[in-house]
Amino acid sequence: MVLAEELYVSDKQGSDQDGDGTEQNPFKTPLKRWAVISKTQMKNVKKLYHREQTKTDTKDQKEVKIYQLEPLREQRVKVFGWVHRLRRQGKNLLFIVLRDGTGFLQCVLTDKLCQCYNGLVLSTESTVALYGTVKPVPEGKQAPGGHELHCDFWEMIGLAPAGGADNLLNEESDVDVQLNNRHMMIRGENVSKILRVRSTVTQCFRDHFFSRGYYEITPPTLVQTQVEGGSTLFKLDYFGEQAYLTQSSQLYLETCLPALGDTFCIAQSYRAEQSRTRRHLSEYTHIEAECPFMSYEDLLNRLEDLVCDVVDRVLKSPAAALLYDINPDFKPPKRPFKRMNYTEAIEWLKEHDIKKDDGTYYEFGEVCAPLHLNINIMNIVCFCVSLWGQVDVLMPNVGEIVGGSMRIWDADELLEGYKREGIDPTPYYWYTDQRKFGSCPHGGYGLGLERFLTWLLNRHHIRDVCLYPRFIQRCRP
Image (tube, rainbow, N blue to C red; front, top):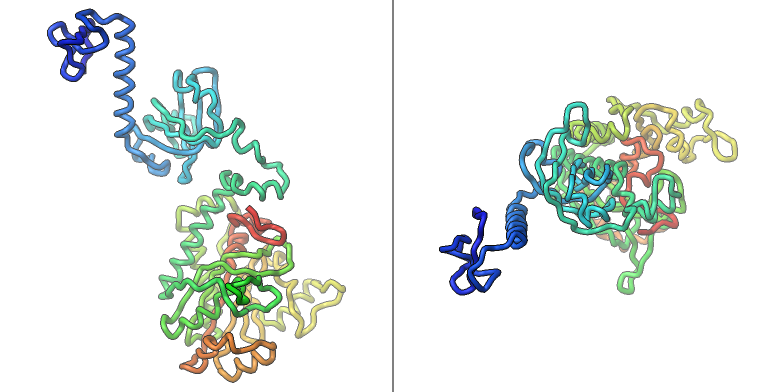
């Protein structure tokens, strides 16, 4: 539509649909007689026209995510997101760093776009829709992705309180304050980087297993049997019956061997340990696998392959840049891993002057827990192999990340084990049946995802790699 210099309107003969504002073909409004439209009316009509035109342009505008913008340079786009950072420069310039979960985008608002009411009250963590043209940043300047959005229109979606997340916490806040407001902490750049890496690492574990011919299962987490010992069970009332949160999915994985062969799961496990250390959680992500017709040497080789292959996959993924950003000194483990048996571990503790709390050295037959806690003095990945077909994988600065073993596959030996540990075999009938109906040598292991990430990202505390960590006196938010 082209607006004439003089516009005519007629209530009787005019038409707002078909009229063109000429004397011969006038509009219907705003006057009830033939008249030349006033300057004020002309101004209002132009405003209305441009407003409607903008609505049409924005309605049809392509919506994109920030990570998709590079090939769209010099094109007009629409982007939704949260105001991550905000900087006002005088009355006519406003810089926004927008966050949408896929990346960050610098946006430039000028003149009336930042002088309107919403522009004056805009705060960090507000949600907005921004329209504009993607432009490469000027030479000598920097911005995320190497480009910025020159806005020509924007909408307020949800206004956050003045001050944004700083109302609740900042980097100097007490640890408990940070954990109480974890829902806001995860919006920060550091925590969100860790969560992105965690997502990729989880995917890499799945890709590893699928590439090796494993099947994934989803075992129950409400159980009536124990795996690791009764003292670490979370008990609950299950419709009048005693039940527990699972400590491990090992037993269920073992039942799948005759049906599926090599199997794995990525599920939550729960331990009611009275431990509040930088390595312990009450709820953690447990990556477990069981394999039939496997020797002890096979088990060790598979664990070595697991760790090295998953790390290799992560380093070939887009998350590699984030990993090195968080842990610049990361070096992937080299094969073969150092292997020491139980006797060698006892000697190693003595050689490195590691003692029990009472000041005496560990002797043959005692549990070598401090080996896991003091492994930080060894800048290597290590197997600690027992004399009883068990194995731990130890990582620098973290300690044990994997525990595995060959499983009892003889029915009589299993029944003797129940008796020795004082366990009623009745609830385990389905597990015992695996030894009666076609038993075979088999083994498996469990890996704690959070400990693996703590090592991979060189974090001091395991809570740093959790979405909402659970440990003693911490079950919120």
